Image 1: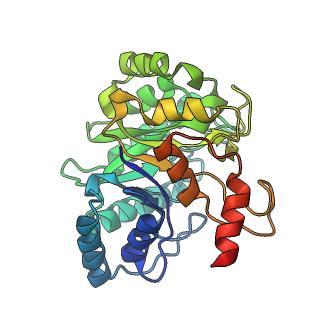
Image 2: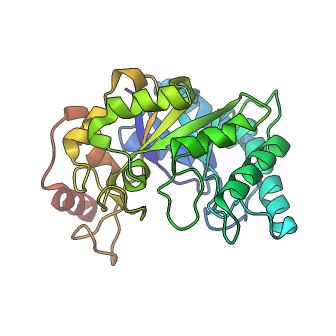
Amino acid sequence: MYLGCHVNFGSEQLLGSTKQAISYGANAFMFYTGAPQNTIRKSLNDELTLEALKMMKENNILLQNIICHAPYIINLANKKDPSKWEFSINFLRNEINRCEQMQVKYIVVHPGSAVEISKEEGLSNISEALNLIVKEDDKCMILLETMAGKGTECGSSLEEIKDILDKVNFDNIGVCLDSCHLNDAGYDMTKFDEFLNEFDEIIGINKIKCVHVNDSKNEIDTHKDRHANIGYGTLGFENILNIIYNERLKDIPKILETPYVGKDIDDKSRDYAPYLFEIKMIKEKRFNKNLIKDINEYYNKK
């Protein structure tokens, strides 16, 4: 099983991300190369990258289980302002180049939001943008993330993802599933095998290269996109385990993006990463009803 979580990309860059993942007991991880809300990026330090690659090898972390996430501000769906659309294209291309410099194989991208145009036009704009971004010899593959359908988001149905992929000239584009987004978009995660059958029929299961594992604070089909900690949402612990341990996805990295927590699950005054404890729960297949208490006790002792 390849299980990990979101980690930071700070002053030590990929090396720091690797150290953090190992500290959580992860053998996969995902990171942003800078803040997800802006386009400020520092130059990559190749020496730190080499140290990170060495540490990954020593700790049995495979390169195909390292995922980069593109920033949220990229919007390939809307080109009412051509300069903003072109900026998104150029910035994503630059992120791909940065990934290739670090030997990272995958970058997850939110398809984008239509905003004042039709969904059909938005989907077409995404495909057009990808045709300008993707190169046939790219070593880093774009993964389109399944979305919750909040507002004018594109990519909240398998048909929309297929529509995008069908219009792209290259085959080297994959898909990243998100269990919270799928639930909120209307897919029943209690019947995950049936969902995979549908995915295979519409898109092809071989396109799945990553799974974001998140519980949801919302009921199915509410289109809200609010992540919950593992077992503390509407999907529930057993359903999450069924997704993670599904045999058809056994070689695919599973990445936790669950919320940081404080003295209670919704406390915003303090925030501690839950990943060490959630990964332990998943490996042991035993729900921890004292998750919040254990997290607080652990970090308050450090």
